[in-house]
Image: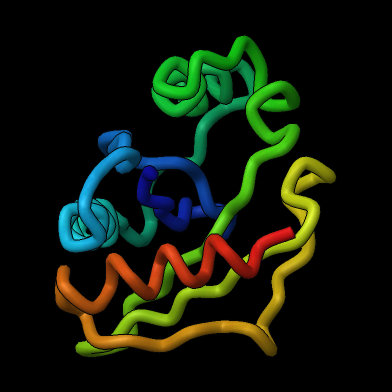
Length: 129
């Protein structure tokens, strides 16, 4: 699990610490998700083409993957968005295909607390295909 931050160019990039959440209790998963969400920023420097490997390295290393393609294959992804005191969790389908397709009609909204966010995140991952 890793935060995303919006670059000055408008794109979203991996940002901050990588958290390994399995096997953890649902509340611990929620706590790690909260920490990752708090690391997200707006208007961070946009990496040059030659720097993308450096941007992707932390999550690839954590997953034991040698490339983004290898990492994405078979991966499930849920996008989290903090909205005031609640979090919107949007599952994806076919993440390994260029980031997949968002499933907005299956999004889950919950309170921004560890004990609620963790179980909601597990439900959102169960929706991913």
